[in-house]
Length: 275
Image (cartoon, rainbow, N blue to C red; front, side, top):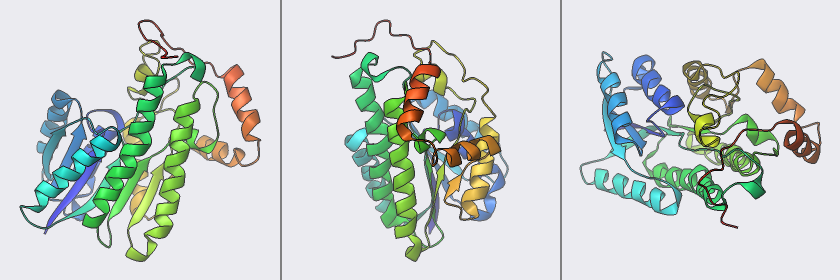
């Protein structure tokens, strides 16, 4: 039976690093194909070429598509249905990594972009997981990219933090539900990581995240935790302390503090708030 790994948001950053780490270090999973899902076809082709140069790597297949929202998730469902026509297959690993954030107070950010964020970070992730589960079996793994933002409401980051709180809550509950099927679910909860995230979130006002750590190291740590059947992957001691602190400090106080003292640059030019 064909064994498949699916990675969304695989064109760059942690998604790309998930693809490379899995292809290079986890050949014991006997993955036949690794599906790279994202919008930017050129970037996906670059990642696929890098995978092909890894001895013994799985066959990379690219799916250039917008998977946002229910329509995007349904498009992914159709891909699975089409693949089923060619024979049975098993999804060994699903990495829901696609997502983005937006810096700035909610009142000042484009409401359309905030809704698109919910569509991708929450709706798409939920749908793709649901449509994948019938093809998963005992020993399969799900990794959902959440964030340190999942642990508390954040001023200037309100919707993003809320979407990641959803991802963490959903992942934890799903882990409990799938325990009987022996399907393992892990939520990746990173803090600042060196990816394109800040450039997108700030609309170009901040090219790189401040004090970001290596994306590849973050992904490597997550895979080790996930395959050790841990429910969360939090790499740094500082991040673990922040997660613990979120249980002590009032959520409102955290939101108020971050609103006043954690300003994030954002270029509002040429964007309408839709209000």
